[in-house]
Structure formats: C-alpha cells, structure tokens
Image (cartoon, rainbow, N blue to C red):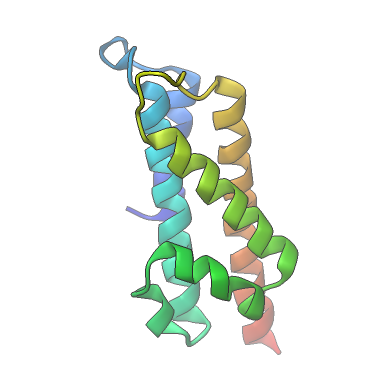
Length: 126
C-alpha cells in the first residue's frame, strides 16, 4: 500500500470505526498512520539517492533527515513517529490515544508526506 492509501484507511478508522474494532481502533489507526510515515520516508530516501537509509531502522532515518531535508521537517517527523510509536504499544495502565491526538498525528504525517514530495519535486526541477 502507498502512504496515501494507509492514511486514507486510518482516516476511515478516525471517522467511522467499525463495531468489531470498538476496543482497538485507536491503536490500529496509530499503526496505519505510523506505517504511512515509514513508507513515505522509504520512498523519499529512494528519490533523493540515499537508498541505503531506506534499509536502516526508522530511528536512524529520523537522525539523518535534517541533513537531507530541514530541521523543522525532521522535527515534525520525529515528533509524529515517537507519538505514534508510544500510542501503538498497549499497556494496561495507559489509556488509548484520544481522537484529537490521532487526528493531529494524522494531519502531521499528511503534511510531512506533502513536504517530502515537494522537496523531491523542487530538487528534480533544479
């Protein structure tokens, strides 16, 4: 699936979760959104001739991102990825992420993917 398709599925869960997922839709939404972010990063590395980074763990990719993008883009990616990772891991003593948190992460990942596409597009037209 493409990052856009993953975000679309996450949006469906945010908008109208099915009854069968009433207890786990929040974590499923976080998982789909985080997968979209990771897939978007992999695509970005391939397009900026840094394909070796696409095979590295996401933490390493996030460390390299300020060099290939900019600090604000890297901060957005890092903040969203860490929040989504925390939300995905179920602990009985923690509440599931709220709808507002999930919507904010979804919006951040969509903005990040747009920014990465824009950077690739502007680099190729130069």
